[in-house]
Image (cartoon, rainbow, N blue to C red; front, top):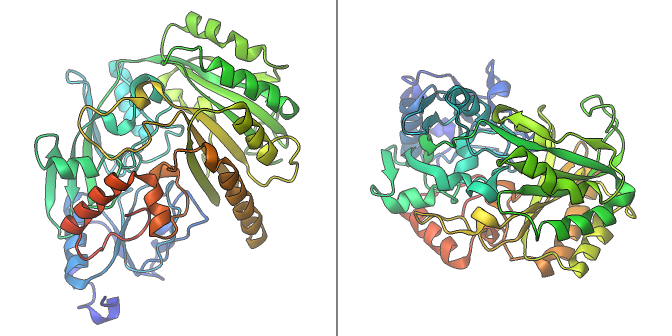
Length: 458
């Protein structure tokens, strides 16, 4: 691969409307920094794309010079540091156009889910977003996208109608179920393996409000609450979306005073149906143990962040996931032995079990590369990595939890929250062997030089 100082400088990028920056330039650090501060980027050059034409021009230059390419909007999924090559930053591409008659939104590559929700709400519509509306809509979707309301409506990628995507040779494609369907398939669950999406059109939901929030219990009641929750989820309609989490919250101002500096068991719910029915369904959870804080209420869809209350400020994070089958009593005991109240020095900030199934278990109407439809639960862990000693303790706890829970797993992870990708075999855990082979074939077709090699690729 040619290095940048061997290329004809950056003259080929001079027509790009957005900034073209190298280390030491004003604005470089701001341009490359994403939400996850544990994966600092130091590319040789960053292009702050102002539109699809900039993305195409940057890729043509990369192809001509053999320069590897990464793409970033918000950096929530930045689990792998980009330490060379070209980074295409799409954070200026924030356009959102809602078509209320067709119930769709056309979303540019750098728009966040909060942008989409704000444009959709005046029309009585909502987007199928994840647990944080600060996340980039496109990056979330090409990884499949696990929504807060997933059991009710399916994966985020299930609602996509089309993509505009630039492949590494600098060709801009418009792809949907009828036009280049294999490319369309790869962009729904294959992440950024075959191209850089410049915009997408996705369906919106006719939904104004939902019943959502969380019931918080003192952590010493974790076993009782988890046992009650695992029994309760077997009885609820598929539209009831919920998770159980253990949280060891630090004593910092960013955490609300009632929760700060304590160990908690939490059940979060999101219900798009009749609020009175949702409240009635929730009663057994509230009876599982003494309730300390209860935030469940009817809220506008624009305020869906209140369900999971994820951090809004960037921080150094290590995350990991594992897809699980049924949570048997032995699996529950194993889980608590690893991260429950009898493990006071556990360094994991959050360990969450998401209830899958429902619409998440049904095949997509158009073939895709999401390989989580057979899972009944998602196990996710999140930790703050602020120092080398933190990193060592977090890696040990993360690996121990994954090893302990693997016997109850499907063998796979979710692309978006896989965590730092390891070797080829580790990255392949996000897909079945058949889907992985298909994705690898498509990558070799559209990216034979493997320019898009950063992050989670096959």
